[in-house]
Image (tube, rainbow, N blue to C red; front, side, top):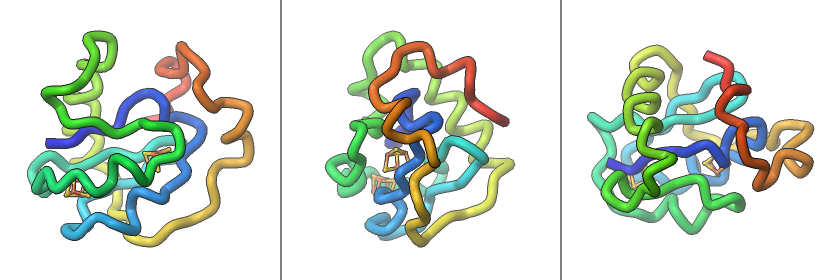
Length: 106
Ligand code: SF4
Ligand code: F3S
């Protein structure tokens, strides 16, 4: 499946949700995840993300591997999102910042 990684946290631009043909994005307070049971690996969401947060599971760098499990866990808890909403207010300040993982709100 495709996976949303750390770069999305506190940015949450939501451009990705508009293009998914199977509506498998799920929304939390400051992060989105992909439901791995629904994703068909079409890849169209990857170039939509302005902060390059989405990757195919097999292509994840080692420091983002833990997001495979995080996506699976949170997809089971969070509601679907299928239409774009505003990015989070501090999205630009958090763009590309390392160490955002600790800020993830579950
Ligand atoms: Fe949706 Fe395709 Fe992205 Fe999977 S890879 S989340 S099916 S747009
Ligand atoms: Fe997050 Fe990028 Fe989508 S910031 S909400 S993965 S467009």
